[in-house]
Image 1: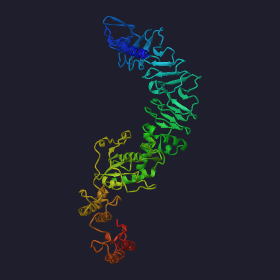
Image 2: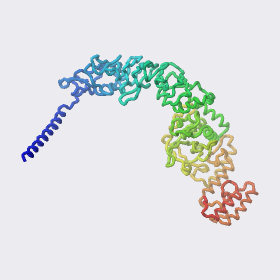
Image 3: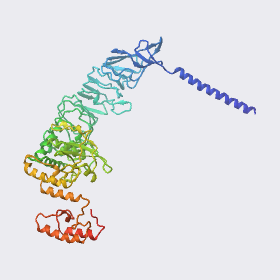
Image 4: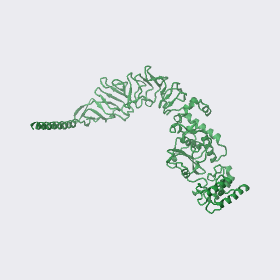
Length: 616
Protein backbone atom coordinates (compact mmCIF):
# COMPACT_ATOMS: atom_id res chain seq x y z
CA UNK A 1 0.00 0.00 0.00
CA UNK A 2 2.86 2.36 0.87
CA UNK A 3 4.59 1.51 -2.42
CA UNK A 4 1.46 2.45 -4.40
CA UNK A 5 1.23 5.83 -2.59
CA UNK A 6 4.90 6.48 -3.23
CA UNK A 7 4.51 5.68 -6.92
CA UNK A 8 1.51 7.97 -7.13
CA UNK A 9 3.39 10.84 -5.55
CA UNK A 10 6.28 10.30 -7.95
CA UNK A 11 3.96 10.49 -10.95
CA UNK A 12 2.40 13.69 -9.60
CA UNK A 13 5.77 15.31 -9.07
CA UNK A 14 6.88 14.31 -12.54
CA UNK A 15 3.72 15.78 -14.07
CA UNK A 16 4.18 19.06 -12.21
CA UNK A 17 7.82 19.19 -13.29
CA UNK A 18 6.89 18.69 -16.95
CA UNK A 19 4.18 21.36 -16.78
CA UNK A 20 6.56 23.82 -15.15
CA UNK A 21 9.13 23.10 -17.83
CA UNK A 22 6.56 23.61 -20.64
CA UNK A 23 5.22 26.80 -19.10
CA UNK A 24 8.72 27.98 -18.47
CA UNK A 25 9.71 27.37 -22.06
CA UNK A 26 6.70 29.31 -23.26
CA UNK A 27 7.65 32.19 -20.99
CA UNK A 28 11.23 32.01 -22.24
CA UNK A 29 10.09 32.06 -25.88
CA UNK A 30 7.82 34.97 -25.13
CA UNK A 31 10.55 36.79 -23.33
CA UNK A 32 13.08 36.34 -26.14
CA UNK A 33 10.84 36.78 -29.27
CA UNK A 34 12.38 39.47 -31.49
CA UNK A 35 10.63 42.81 -31.93
CA UNK A 36 10.93 45.17 -34.92
CA UNK A 37 12.18 48.62 -34.02
CA UNK A 38 13.09 51.85 -35.82
CA UNK A 39 16.56 53.21 -35.18
CA UNK A 40 16.86 56.52 -33.37
CA UNK A 41 18.44 58.09 -36.47
CA UNK A 42 15.39 57.06 -38.56
CA UNK A 43 17.50 55.23 -41.16
CA UNK A 44 16.67 51.61 -40.37
CA UNK A 45 14.01 49.26 -39.18
CA UNK A 46 15.54 46.22 -37.49
CA UNK A 47 14.80 43.44 -35.05
CA UNK A 48 16.01 43.24 -31.50
CA UNK A 49 18.02 40.13 -32.39
CA UNK A 50 20.14 42.20 -34.77
CA UNK A 51 18.61 41.74 -38.22
CA UNK A 52 18.17 44.68 -40.62
CA UNK A 53 14.61 44.73 -42.00
CA UNK A 54 14.48 47.83 -44.20
CA UNK A 55 16.61 50.82 -45.07
CA UNK A 56 14.56 53.99 -44.61
CA UNK A 57 17.04 56.61 -45.82
CA UNK A 58 17.92 57.95 -49.25
CA UNK A 59 21.72 58.19 -49.29
CA UNK A 60 23.60 57.11 -52.41
CA UNK A 61 26.28 55.36 -50.32
CA UNK A 62 24.95 53.00 -47.65
CA UNK A 63 27.01 51.38 -44.91
CA UNK A 64 25.44 48.47 -43.10
CA UNK A 65 25.68 49.42 -39.41
CA UNK A 66 27.62 47.58 -36.74
CA UNK A 67 25.25 48.78 -34.01
CA UNK A 68 21.93 50.58 -33.90
CA UNK A 69 20.15 52.41 -31.10
CA UNK A 70 16.43 52.46 -30.50
CA UNK A 71 14.90 54.28 -27.56
CA UNK A 72 18.41 54.77 -26.26
CA UNK A 73 19.16 51.03 -26.18
CA UNK A 74 22.07 49.75 -28.32
CA UNK A 75 21.72 46.59 -30.42
CA UNK A 76 24.41 44.61 -32.26
CA UNK A 77 23.67 44.07 -35.97
CA UNK A 78 24.77 40.86 -37.70
CA UNK A 79 22.18 40.04 -40.37
CA UNK A 80 20.07 41.59 -43.14
CA UNK A 81 16.75 40.37 -44.54
CA UNK A 82 16.11 39.91 -48.28
CA UNK A 83 15.11 43.19 -49.89
CA UNK A 84 16.13 45.34 -46.95
CA UNK A 85 17.85 47.58 -49.48
CA UNK A 86 16.30 47.44 -52.95
CA UNK A 87 14.07 48.74 -55.71
CA UNK A 88 15.54 52.20 -56.17
CA UNK A 89 17.73 54.16 -58.57
CA UNK A 90 19.59 56.16 -55.88
CA UNK A 91 21.96 53.67 -54.28
CA UNK A 92 25.40 53.58 -55.95
CA UNK A 93 27.56 51.95 -53.29
CA UNK A 94 27.08 49.59 -50.32
CA UNK A 95 29.63 48.90 -47.59
CA UNK A 96 29.50 45.68 -45.57
CA UNK A 97 31.54 45.39 -42.41
CA UNK A 98 33.01 42.40 -40.59
CA UNK A 99 29.92 42.14 -38.39
CA UNK A 100 27.48 41.07 -41.13
CA UNK A 101 27.35 37.28 -41.29
CA UNK A 102 23.89 36.71 -42.74
CA UNK A 103 22.39 38.14 -45.95
CA UNK A 104 18.93 37.20 -47.21
CA UNK A 105 18.71 35.09 -50.35
CA UNK A 106 17.73 38.02 -52.57
CA UNK A 107 20.18 40.65 -51.40
CA UNK A 108 19.97 44.15 -52.89
CA UNK A 109 17.30 43.58 -55.59
CA UNK A 110 16.70 45.98 -58.49
CA UNK A 111 19.20 48.68 -57.55
CA UNK A 112 19.55 50.09 -61.04
CA UNK A 113 22.34 52.57 -60.17
CA UNK A 114 24.43 50.32 -57.93
CA UNK A 115 28.11 50.34 -58.91
CA UNK A 116 29.89 48.39 -56.20
CA UNK A 117 29.58 46.46 -52.96
CA UNK A 118 32.58 46.76 -50.65
CA UNK A 119 33.18 44.05 -48.05
CA UNK A 120 35.57 44.29 -45.10
CA UNK A 121 38.52 41.88 -45.45
CA UNK A 122 37.79 40.76 -41.88
CA UNK A 123 34.28 39.56 -42.75
CA UNK A 124 34.18 35.79 -42.13
CA UNK A 125 31.30 35.03 -44.55
CA UNK A 126 31.58 37.40 -47.51
CA UNK A 127 34.07 39.13 -49.78
CA UNK A 128 34.10 41.24 -52.91
CA UNK A 129 36.15 41.29 -56.09
CA UNK A 130 36.10 44.67 -57.84
CA UNK A 131 32.89 45.56 -56.04
CA UNK A 132 31.16 42.26 -56.90
CA UNK A 133 29.80 40.32 -53.91
CA UNK A 134 30.81 36.66 -53.34
CA UNK A 135 30.74 34.28 -50.43
CA UNK A 136 34.06 34.04 -48.58
CA UNK A 137 35.19 30.96 -50.52
CA UNK A 138 34.35 32.71 -53.81
CA UNK A 139 32.31 29.73 -54.97
CA UNK A 140 29.02 31.63 -55.18
CA UNK A 141 28.39 35.00 -56.83
CA UNK A 142 25.89 36.70 -54.54
CA UNK A 143 25.32 40.06 -56.20
CA UNK A 144 26.55 41.75 -59.35
CA UNK A 145 25.87 45.52 -59.21
CA UNK A 146 24.01 46.57 -62.34
CA UNK A 147 26.26 49.56 -62.98
CA UNK A 148 29.54 47.90 -61.99
CA UNK A 149 32.21 49.32 -64.33
CA UNK A 150 33.86 45.95 -65.00
CA UNK A 151 34.14 45.36 -68.76
CA UNK A 152 35.83 41.96 -68.64
CA UNK A 153 34.32 39.77 -65.95
CA UNK A 154 36.89 37.18 -64.95
CA UNK A 155 35.14 34.84 -62.57
CA UNK A 156 37.35 33.36 -59.82
CA UNK A 157 38.81 29.87 -60.25
CA UNK A 158 36.57 28.62 -57.44
CA UNK A 159 33.28 29.95 -58.90
CA UNK A 160 30.49 27.37 -59.32
CA UNK A 161 27.16 29.24 -59.61
CA UNK A 162 25.21 32.46 -59.00
CA UNK A 163 22.66 32.82 -56.24
CA UNK A 164 19.10 33.37 -57.51
CA UNK A 165 18.76 36.97 -58.70
CA UNK A 166 22.47 37.65 -58.23
CA UNK A 167 22.84 39.02 -61.77
CA UNK A 168 19.97 41.14 -63.02
CA UNK A 169 21.86 42.99 -65.72
CA UNK A 170 25.62 43.27 -66.16
CA UNK A 171 25.37 45.94 -68.82
CA UNK A 172 29.03 47.03 -68.87
CA UNK A 173 30.44 43.54 -69.35
CA UNK A 174 31.68 42.92 -72.89
CA UNK A 175 33.99 40.01 -72.10
CA UNK A 176 33.31 36.96 -69.90
CA UNK A 177 35.97 34.53 -68.66
CA UNK A 178 34.58 31.27 -67.32
CA UNK A 179 36.75 29.09 -65.04
CA UNK A 180 37.07 25.31 -65.06
CA UNK A 181 35.11 25.13 -61.79
CA UNK A 182 31.83 26.32 -63.37
CA UNK A 183 29.53 23.36 -64.16
CA UNK A 184 26.54 25.19 -65.66
CA UNK A 185 24.14 22.79 -63.95
CA UNK A 186 20.70 23.94 -62.87
CA UNK A 187 20.09 24.41 -59.15
CA UNK A 188 16.98 25.14 -57.11
CA UNK A 189 18.87 27.79 -55.14
CA UNK A 190 20.88 29.32 -57.93
CA UNK A 191 21.09 30.69 -61.47
CA UNK A 192 23.30 29.68 -64.35
CA UNK A 193 25.16 32.23 -66.42
CA UNK A 194 22.64 33.16 -69.11
CA UNK A 195 22.53 35.46 -72.15
CA UNK A 196 19.76 37.60 -70.63
CA UNK A 197 22.16 38.78 -67.90
CA UNK A 198 24.79 40.16 -70.29
CA UNK A 199 23.11 42.34 -72.95
CA UNK A 200 26.38 43.84 -74.26
CA UNK A 201 28.59 40.76 -74.20
CA UNK A 202 30.93 40.47 -77.20
CA UNK A 203 33.11 37.49 -76.36
CA UNK A 204 33.33 34.47 -74.06
CA UNK A 205 36.57 32.74 -73.06
CA UNK A 206 36.57 29.40 -71.25
CA UNK A 207 39.45 27.93 -69.30
CA UNK A 208 41.12 25.18 -71.37
CA UNK A 209 40.95 22.98 -68.26
CA UNK A 210 37.16 23.12 -68.09
CA UNK A 211 35.61 19.64 -68.24
CA UNK A 212 32.20 21.17 -68.99
CA UNK A 213 32.60 23.93 -71.58
CA UNK A 214 34.74 25.21 -74.42
CA UNK A 215 34.88 28.37 -76.48
CA UNK A 216 35.90 29.24 -79.99
CA UNK A 217 35.96 32.67 -81.59
CA UNK A 218 34.15 34.03 -78.53
CA UNK A 219 31.22 31.57 -78.74
CA UNK A 220 30.38 29.20 -75.88
CA UNK A 221 29.94 25.44 -76.48
CA UNK A 222 29.77 22.38 -74.30
CA UNK A 223 33.07 20.55 -73.90
CA UNK A 224 32.89 18.40 -77.06
CA UNK A 225 31.17 21.13 -79.12
CA UNK A 226 28.02 19.16 -79.79
CA UNK A 227 25.92 21.95 -78.27
CA UNK A 228 26.14 25.65 -79.06
CA UNK A 229 25.30 27.30 -75.75
CA UNK A 230 25.77 31.05 -76.22
CA UNK A 231 26.48 33.39 -79.10
CA UNK A 232 27.36 36.77 -77.51
CA UNK A 233 24.78 39.42 -78.50
CA UNK A 234 27.39 42.05 -79.36
CA UNK A 235 29.80 39.76 -81.19
CA UNK A 236 31.15 41.80 -84.09
CA UNK A 237 30.37 39.51 -86.99
CA UNK A 238 27.73 39.70 -89.70
CA UNK A 239 27.87 36.01 -90.63
CA UNK A 240 28.36 32.86 -88.61
CA UNK A 241 28.67 29.21 -89.60
CA UNK A 242 27.60 26.65 -87.04
CA UNK A 243 30.38 24.05 -86.66
CA UNK A 244 29.69 20.61 -88.12
CA UNK A 245 30.05 19.05 -84.66
CA UNK A 246 27.04 20.94 -83.29
CA UNK A 247 23.86 18.91 -82.92
CA UNK A 248 21.97 21.12 -80.47
CA UNK A 249 21.43 24.89 -80.28
CA UNK A 250 20.53 25.85 -76.72
CA UNK A 251 17.57 28.05 -75.79
CA UNK A 252 18.23 31.75 -76.47
CA UNK A 253 21.77 30.99 -77.64
CA UNK A 254 21.36 33.66 -80.34
CA UNK A 255 19.15 36.03 -78.35
CA UNK A 256 19.60 39.69 -79.43
CA UNK A 257 22.59 38.95 -81.69
CA UNK A 258 22.67 42.53 -82.92
CA UNK A 259 25.22 42.37 -85.72
CA UNK A 260 24.43 38.91 -87.07
CA UNK A 261 22.82 39.04 -90.51
CA UNK A 262 23.47 35.58 -91.97
CA UNK A 263 23.44 32.23 -90.20
CA UNK A 264 24.72 29.09 -91.89
CA UNK A 265 22.96 25.94 -90.70
CA UNK A 266 24.25 22.41 -91.23
CA UNK A 267 22.48 19.12 -91.80
CA UNK A 268 23.96 17.78 -88.55
CA UNK A 269 21.71 19.91 -86.34
CA UNK A 270 19.17 17.74 -84.54
CA UNK A 271 17.47 20.21 -82.24
CA UNK A 272 17.03 23.96 -81.91
CA UNK A 273 15.36 25.31 -78.78
CA UNK A 274 13.48 28.63 -78.65
CA UNK A 275 15.76 31.14 -80.30
CA UNK A 276 16.55 34.21 -82.40
CA UNK A 277 14.38 36.75 -80.59
CA UNK A 278 15.91 40.18 -81.11
CA UNK A 279 17.92 39.03 -84.15
CA UNK A 280 17.71 40.66 -87.57
CA UNK A 281 18.76 37.93 -89.96
CA UNK A 282 18.53 39.01 -93.58
CA UNK A 283 19.56 35.62 -94.99
CA UNK A 284 19.89 31.98 -94.01
CA UNK A 285 22.82 30.10 -95.58
CA UNK A 286 23.09 33.21 -97.80
CA UNK A 287 19.62 32.49 -99.24
CA UNK A 288 17.50 35.56 -99.95
CA UNK A 289 15.34 34.68 -102.98
CA UNK A 290 12.54 32.22 -103.64
CA UNK A 291 14.54 30.52 -106.37
CA UNK A 292 17.47 29.96 -104.01
CA UNK A 293 15.14 28.64 -101.34
CA UNK A 294 13.37 26.21 -103.67
CA UNK A 295 16.75 24.82 -104.77
CA UNK A 296 18.31 24.71 -101.29
CA UNK A 297 20.06 21.49 -100.22
CA UNK A 298 17.14 19.40 -98.85
CA UNK A 299 19.24 18.00 -96.00
CA UNK A 300 19.83 21.51 -94.60
CA UNK A 301 16.46 22.88 -95.68
CA UNK A 302 14.70 20.23 -93.61
CA UNK A 303 16.53 21.45 -90.48
CA UNK A 304 15.23 24.95 -91.18
CA UNK A 305 11.69 23.74 -91.87
CA UNK A 306 11.58 21.81 -88.60
CA UNK A 307 12.27 25.08 -86.79
CA UNK A 308 10.26 27.52 -88.93
CA UNK A 309 8.46 28.99 -85.94
CA UNK A 310 11.74 30.26 -84.47
CA UNK A 311 12.69 32.05 -87.69
CA UNK A 312 9.27 33.38 -88.73
CA UNK A 313 9.85 36.95 -87.50
CA UNK A 314 13.30 37.27 -89.08
CA UNK A 315 13.56 39.69 -92.04
CA UNK A 316 14.73 36.98 -94.45
CA UNK A 317 11.77 34.72 -93.55
CA UNK A 318 9.31 37.59 -93.96
CA UNK A 319 10.83 38.36 -97.35
CA UNK A 320 10.69 34.72 -98.49
CA UNK A 321 7.03 34.46 -97.44
CA UNK A 322 6.20 37.65 -99.35
CA UNK A 323 7.99 36.28 -102.41
CA UNK A 324 6.03 33.02 -102.19
CA UNK A 325 2.76 34.93 -101.85
CA UNK A 326 3.66 36.96 -104.92
CA UNK A 327 4.44 33.72 -106.76
CA UNK A 328 1.00 32.37 -105.85
CA UNK A 329 -0.69 35.53 -107.08
CA UNK A 330 1.32 35.63 -110.30
CA UNK A 331 0.63 32.00 -111.12
CA UNK A 332 -2.92 31.48 -109.84
CA UNK A 333 -4.60 34.84 -110.32
CA UNK A 334 -5.50 36.03 -113.81
CA UNK A 335 -6.36 39.54 -114.89
CA UNK A 336 -10.08 40.27 -114.71
CA UNK A 337 -10.89 37.65 -112.06
CA UNK A 338 -13.69 38.55 -109.65
CA UNK A 339 -13.27 38.04 -105.91
CA UNK A 340 -14.80 34.58 -105.99
CA UNK A 341 -12.41 33.43 -108.70
CA UNK A 342 -9.44 34.86 -106.79
CA UNK A 343 -10.56 33.15 -103.61
CA UNK A 344 -11.09 29.83 -105.37
CA UNK A 345 -7.69 30.02 -107.08
CA UNK A 346 -5.81 30.78 -103.84
CA UNK A 347 -7.77 28.04 -102.07
CA UNK A 348 -6.44 25.64 -104.67
CA UNK A 349 -2.90 26.99 -104.29
CA UNK A 350 -2.80 26.35 -100.53
CA UNK A 351 -4.19 22.84 -100.84
CA UNK A 352 -1.77 21.98 -103.64
CA UNK A 353 1.18 23.55 -101.80
CA UNK A 354 1.12 21.53 -98.55
CA UNK A 355 -0.24 18.40 -96.94
CA UNK A 356 -1.74 17.99 -93.50
CA UNK A 357 1.11 16.74 -91.37
CA UNK A 358 1.46 13.10 -90.41
CA UNK A 359 3.69 14.16 -87.51
CA UNK A 360 2.96 15.68 -84.12
CA UNK A 361 0.07 18.07 -84.73
CA UNK A 362 0.91 19.99 -81.55
CA UNK A 363 4.40 20.84 -82.79
CA UNK A 364 4.75 24.63 -83.12
CA UNK A 365 6.41 24.33 -86.53
CA UNK A 366 3.03 23.39 -88.04
CA UNK A 367 1.08 26.17 -86.35
CA UNK A 368 2.88 29.09 -87.95
CA UNK A 369 1.99 30.89 -91.15
CA UNK A 370 5.37 30.02 -92.68
CA UNK A 371 4.56 26.31 -92.52
CA UNK A 372 2.54 26.71 -95.73
CA UNK A 373 4.75 29.12 -97.66
CA UNK A 374 8.15 27.75 -96.61
CA UNK A 375 7.25 24.25 -95.47
CA UNK A 376 5.68 21.09 -96.85
CA UNK A 377 3.32 20.16 -94.03
CA UNK A 378 0.97 22.07 -91.76
CA UNK A 379 -2.15 21.83 -89.58
CA UNK A 380 -5.44 23.72 -89.56
CA UNK A 381 -3.92 26.88 -88.07
CA UNK A 382 -1.26 26.99 -90.77
CA UNK A 383 -3.86 26.57 -93.55
CA UNK A 384 -6.01 29.33 -92.07
CA UNK A 385 -3.19 31.80 -91.43
CA UNK A 386 -1.80 31.31 -94.93
CA UNK A 387 -5.23 31.78 -96.52
CA UNK A 388 -5.65 34.97 -94.52
CA UNK A 389 -2.39 36.48 -95.75
CA UNK A 390 -3.12 35.49 -99.36
CA UNK A 391 -6.53 37.13 -99.17
CA UNK A 392 -4.93 40.24 -97.67
CA UNK A 393 -2.70 40.37 -100.72
CA UNK A 394 -5.63 40.43 -103.16
CA UNK A 395 -7.78 42.73 -101.03
CA UNK A 396 -10.49 40.34 -99.85
CA UNK A 397 -11.60 41.05 -96.24
CA UNK A 398 -11.12 38.04 -93.99
CA UNK A 399 -10.23 36.77 -90.54
CA UNK A 400 -9.01 33.56 -88.90
CA UNK A 401 -11.35 31.94 -86.39
CA UNK A 402 -11.11 29.18 -83.82
CA UNK A 403 -13.75 26.86 -82.47
CA UNK A 404 -14.50 23.41 -81.12
CA UNK A 405 -17.35 21.01 -80.46
CA UNK A 406 -17.80 17.61 -78.86
CA UNK A 407 -16.18 15.85 -81.80
CA UNK A 408 -13.41 18.39 -82.53
CA UNK A 409 -11.20 19.55 -79.67
CA UNK A 410 -9.66 22.52 -81.48
CA UNK A 411 -9.86 23.82 -85.03
CA UNK A 412 -9.04 26.92 -87.08
CA UNK A 413 -10.49 28.15 -90.38
CA UNK A 414 -11.43 31.40 -92.16
CA UNK A 415 -14.28 33.82 -92.60
CA UNK A 416 -14.27 35.78 -95.86
CA UNK A 417 -16.33 38.65 -97.18
CA UNK A 418 -17.52 38.20 -100.77
CA UNK A 419 -20.07 40.46 -102.44
CA UNK A 420 -20.66 42.14 -99.10
CA UNK A 421 -21.57 38.84 -97.40
CA UNK A 422 -19.52 36.97 -94.79
CA UNK A 423 -19.15 33.22 -95.37
CA UNK A 424 -16.78 30.53 -94.11
CA UNK A 425 -14.10 28.44 -95.80
CA UNK A 426 -12.02 25.57 -94.41
CA UNK A 427 -9.00 24.67 -96.49
CA UNK A 428 -7.99 21.98 -94.00
CA UNK A 429 -11.16 19.96 -94.29
CA UNK A 430 -11.46 20.65 -98.04
CA UNK A 431 -7.95 19.33 -98.72
CA UNK A 432 -8.68 16.33 -100.94
CA UNK A 433 -5.02 15.71 -101.66
CA UNK A 434 -4.57 16.77 -105.27
CA UNK A 435 -7.43 19.25 -105.40
CA UNK A 436 -9.65 21.49 -103.29
CA UNK A 437 -13.09 20.23 -102.41
CA UNK A 438 -16.14 22.43 -101.84
CA UNK A 439 -17.97 20.71 -99.01
CA UNK A 440 -16.73 23.38 -96.58
CA UNK A 441 -16.40 26.21 -99.08
CA UNK A 442 -18.45 29.40 -98.59
CA UNK A 443 -20.87 28.08 -96.00
CA UNK A 444 -22.86 29.68 -93.21
CA UNK A 445 -22.48 28.78 -89.55
CA UNK A 446 -25.72 26.78 -89.58
CA UNK A 447 -24.63 24.87 -92.68
CA UNK A 448 -21.34 24.01 -90.96
CA UNK A 449 -23.11 22.79 -87.84
CA UNK A 450 -25.31 20.46 -89.89
CA UNK A 451 -22.21 18.66 -91.23
CA UNK A 452 -20.42 18.43 -87.91
CA UNK A 453 -18.19 21.48 -88.19
CA UNK A 454 -17.53 23.58 -85.05
CA UNK A 455 -19.06 27.03 -84.73
CA UNK A 456 -16.67 30.02 -84.58
CA UNK A 457 -15.84 31.14 -81.04
CA UNK A 458 -12.91 33.55 -81.26
CA UNK A 459 -10.64 35.47 -83.63
CA UNK A 460 -7.00 34.48 -84.14
CA UNK A 461 -5.09 37.69 -84.82
CA UNK A 462 -1.44 36.84 -85.47
CA UNK A 463 1.00 39.59 -86.48
CA UNK A 464 -0.07 39.89 -90.13
CA UNK A 465 1.15 43.49 -90.34
CA UNK A 466 4.81 42.44 -90.28
CA UNK A 467 4.20 41.66 -93.96
CA UNK A 468 4.03 44.69 -96.23
CA UNK A 469 0.47 43.89 -97.33
CA UNK A 470 -0.82 42.18 -94.16
CA UNK A 471 -3.99 43.53 -92.52
CA UNK A 472 -4.51 43.89 -88.77
CA UNK A 473 -7.55 41.82 -87.78
CA UNK A 474 -7.85 42.86 -84.16
CA UNK A 475 -11.18 44.54 -84.97
CA UNK A 476 -12.70 41.05 -84.93
CA UNK A 477 -11.39 40.14 -81.46
CA UNK A 478 -14.67 41.02 -79.79
CA UNK A 479 -16.89 41.25 -82.82
CA UNK A 480 -16.79 38.22 -85.10
CA UNK A 481 -18.68 38.62 -88.39
CA UNK A 482 -22.02 36.88 -88.65
CA UNK A 483 -22.19 34.19 -91.33
CA UNK A 484 -25.93 33.69 -91.65
CA UNK A 485 -26.82 34.41 -95.30
CA UNK A 486 -26.32 31.28 -97.41
CA UNK A 487 -25.76 31.04 -101.12
CA UNK A 488 -29.10 31.02 -102.95
CA UNK A 489 -30.72 33.38 -100.44
CA UNK A 490 -30.41 36.27 -102.85
CA UNK A 491 -32.96 38.51 -101.15
CA UNK A 492 -31.33 37.80 -97.74
CA UNK A 493 -34.53 36.84 -95.97
CA UNK A 494 -32.86 33.83 -94.29
CA UNK A 495 -34.67 31.34 -96.56
CA UNK A 496 -34.13 29.90 -100.03
CA UNK A 497 -37.58 30.03 -101.60
CA UNK A 498 -39.65 31.05 -104.62
CA UNK A 499 -38.84 34.72 -104.07
CA UNK A 500 -35.18 34.01 -104.79
CA UNK A 501 -36.12 32.56 -108.21
CA UNK A 502 -37.27 36.01 -109.29
CA UNK A 503 -34.12 37.62 -107.87
CA UNK A 504 -31.77 35.23 -109.65
CA UNK A 505 -33.28 36.13 -113.03
CA UNK A 506 -32.25 39.73 -112.42
CA UNK A 507 -28.81 38.59 -111.31
CA UNK A 508 -28.33 36.57 -114.48
CA UNK A 509 -29.14 39.62 -116.60
CA UNK A 510 -26.91 41.89 -114.53
CA UNK A 511 -23.99 39.48 -114.77
CA UNK A 512 -24.38 39.05 -118.54
CA UNK A 513 -24.33 42.83 -119.01
CA UNK A 514 -21.78 43.99 -116.45
CA UNK A 515 -19.48 41.09 -115.58
CA UNK A 516 -16.80 42.69 -117.76
CA UNK A 517 -16.89 45.57 -115.28
CA UNK A 518 -16.43 43.16 -112.38
CA UNK A 519 -20.05 42.64 -111.41
CA UNK A 520 -20.62 39.47 -109.41
CA UNK A 521 -22.94 38.35 -106.61
CA UNK A 522 -21.83 35.21 -104.81
CA UNK A 523 -25.34 34.58 -103.45
CA UNK A 524 -26.57 34.01 -107.02
CA UNK A 525 -23.63 31.74 -107.95
CA UNK A 526 -25.45 28.65 -106.70
CA UNK A 527 -23.11 26.13 -108.35
CA UNK A 528 -20.01 28.11 -107.33
CA UNK A 529 -18.31 28.26 -110.70
CA UNK A 530 -17.61 32.02 -110.66
CA UNK A 531 -20.41 32.82 -113.15
CA UNK A 532 -24.11 33.55 -112.85
CA UNK A 533 -26.21 31.84 -115.52
CA UNK A 534 -29.08 29.43 -116.14
CA UNK A 535 -27.17 26.60 -114.49
CA UNK A 536 -27.44 28.55 -111.25
CA UNK A 537 -31.14 29.14 -111.88
CA UNK A 538 -31.78 25.43 -112.43
CA UNK A 539 -29.81 24.45 -109.35
CA UNK A 540 -31.65 27.03 -107.27
CA UNK A 541 -34.96 25.60 -108.44
CA UNK A 542 -33.73 22.15 -107.44
CA UNK A 543 -32.79 23.36 -103.96
CA UNK A 544 -36.16 24.95 -103.44
CA UNK A 545 -37.85 21.67 -104.31
CA UNK A 546 -35.46 19.51 -102.30
CA UNK A 547 -35.87 21.66 -99.20
CA UNK A 548 -39.69 21.68 -99.40
CA UNK A 549 -40.90 19.17 -96.81
CA UNK A 550 -44.22 18.86 -98.61
CA UNK A 551 -42.64 17.58 -101.82
CA UNK A 552 -41.73 13.90 -102.24
CA UNK A 553 -39.15 13.14 -104.95
CA UNK A 554 -40.54 10.39 -107.22
CA UNK A 555 -44.17 11.35 -106.51
CA UNK A 556 -44.84 12.24 -110.14
CA UNK A 557 -48.63 12.05 -109.83
CA UNK A 558 -48.35 14.21 -106.69
CA UNK A 559 -50.75 12.20 -104.56
CA UNK A 560 -48.46 12.22 -101.54
CA UNK A 561 -47.20 8.62 -101.85
CA UNK A 562 -44.95 6.59 -104.09
CA UNK A 563 -47.02 4.08 -106.06
CA UNK A 564 -47.30 2.22 -109.36
CA UNK A 565 -48.82 5.28 -110.99
CA UNK A 566 -45.50 7.04 -110.49
CA UNK A 567 -43.71 4.20 -112.31
CA UNK A 568 -45.96 4.71 -115.35
CA UNK A 569 -45.23 8.42 -115.35
CA UNK A 570 -41.49 7.75 -114.89
CA UNK A 571 -41.46 5.92 -118.24
CA UNK A 572 -42.84 9.07 -119.89
CA UNK A 573 -40.30 11.30 -118.06
CA UNK A 574 -37.41 9.20 -119.33
CA UNK A 575 -38.74 9.50 -122.88
CA UNK A 576 -39.13 13.29 -122.59
CA UNK A 577 -35.60 13.65 -121.22
CA UNK A 578 -34.21 11.67 -124.15
CA UNK A 579 -36.21 13.39 -126.86
CA UNK A 580 -36.69 16.99 -125.70
CA UNK A 581 -33.50 19.01 -125.53
CA UNK A 582 -33.06 20.75 -122.17
CA UNK A 583 -35.98 18.95 -120.56
CA UNK A 584 -35.60 18.17 -116.88
CA UNK A 585 -37.97 17.38 -114.01
CA UNK A 586 -36.38 17.13 -110.58
CA UNK A 587 -39.28 15.04 -109.28
CA UNK A 588 -38.21 12.30 -111.68
CA UNK A 589 -34.49 12.55 -110.84
CA UNK A 590 -34.65 10.14 -107.93
CA UNK A 591 -30.87 9.65 -107.96
CA UNK A 592 -30.38 13.42 -108.25
CA UNK A 593 -27.61 13.23 -110.83
CA UNK A 594 -29.21 15.70 -113.32
CA UNK A 595 -30.07 12.75 -115.56
CA UNK A 596 -33.44 10.97 -115.88
CA UNK A 597 -32.92 7.35 -116.95
CA UNK A 598 -33.55 3.71 -116.12
CA UNK A 599 -31.55 4.03 -112.87
CA UNK A 600 -34.17 6.46 -111.57
CA UNK A 601 -36.90 4.02 -112.62
CA UNK A 602 -35.24 1.10 -110.83
CA UNK A 603 -34.64 3.12 -107.65
CA UNK A 604 -38.24 4.36 -107.66
CA UNK A 605 -39.46 0.77 -108.07
CA UNK A 606 -37.38 -0.27 -105.04
CA UNK A 607 -38.78 2.59 -103.01
CA UNK A 608 -42.34 1.47 -103.86
CA UNK A 609 -41.95 -2.27 -103.33
CA UNK A 610 -39.39 -2.17 -100.53
CA UNK A 611 -40.95 0.22 -97.98
CA UNK A 612 -38.04 -0.19 -95.57
CA UNK A 613 -35.64 1.16 -98.19
CA UNK A 614 -34.41 4.57 -96.95
CA UNK A 615 -36.01 7.44 -98.82
CA UNK A 616 -33.56 10.15 -97.76
